[in-house]
Length: 322
Length: 248
Image (cartoon, helix red, strand yellow):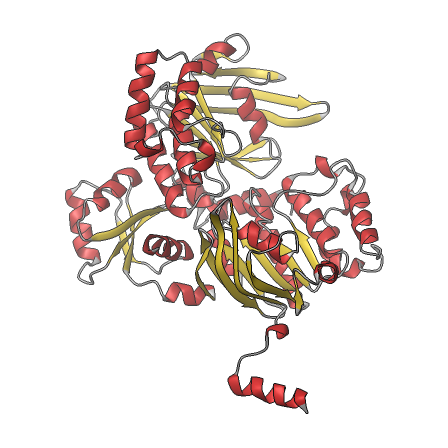
């Protein structure tokens, strides 16, 4: 009877109990030497969700992931993985999660195959038993299975680390900056692998300093100085960008940036690859007036259009607000 | 700025570097002009670091003719080292020295006089808005400040060329852009910038970009021409096309 009551109560309040989410974090804070590494962080991740933490070095991503993987203890707050408490139930949690730390942490002097075997054995399983799960990834490095892990390229190391994190069939994958310092091709391949894992129901939480990777996640939290600035789907974050934004191209980007900064009404001026993004809080500014102004400044090759904000525009906007 | 008529500050012809039977640099030839921002891109393991080490006078090529800042890579390595600056994300400043001590240390290594060091240190801290941080340990200042300071220190002796090896890894988007403002400025002042990055939007800021695949340069041109030649909308697409071509 009690169970049914509890059940209907939850439906009534439309709030699922903490335990239903593979990852739920409530008011986590952590200080190091008086500095807030994490400041009142709360979020939940749904089953099969690909959830991204986007932010620069020092934002608190690694501290958060170390708490979730039971490696450090939060000062305050509560974190549950599959309903298990990261402090009390750490032994059980370690069986359920796969973890890729930020720094390459496999054994450099063991071969590819030996590393994978080692991790399988530690978790009481074998490569053969779970080969199906890692097949797509491992097949790409299998030709090099006799090579020492330390001798692999960045992209191959990353694939081996992911294979090792998956070999015990975890239900939750925690990946700390798996694509940092990795070239654009390997990054793309890596995200394709994550998508496949998500589709077979694995819950994935991943951190990255590359803002362009946000769009590959179901939901993201933008994090800076230990605080979550916003947390939504990438499309929703972009919708919240408040200002009128233009993309401006000229043959001389350096002079263009300086000339745009001279406009007193311009709120922000940032370089964005081949163009500059300039935002205005007021609505009056338009393509024509910008064009006229820049022509008087002697610019050639001008192209001006209204632009949709990117996640990076939104991140910078939130940074300046805080 | 790229000016085809400017003098060459880096000349590489037919550079080969082998490690045993492995060919890390396979007959590279290219020139870099004075004041140019030259993007040196490539996948992990393509051979970029090998080339940079040779250009900085830290490793000898197996064969090839190279001049850096007008000096011969085999015979005038010490002169090369005096005329270049170097900065990477991994190695830049000493954590347990203060901001000022780092400036003094690097300027001293490059042989600047005490009076010049004082002047440049105070100019620099004014420019970076770091006057209050003068006596703080590098360990205690934000990453963004560190990166900007590291770049300023790398060019404190007014080198002909500065090598930047993934200088903006991990920094926040605002700082990353401020960092590029500093690169643009250095280039305006005639310093040649040789830069590697994994951020493809930064490749767009370069005057010319070379893309290395498996030890060879597979493309070298302005970002505009590369995009046109490969029918690509961005440098990211150009990079993916070239670096993926070898896999498929």
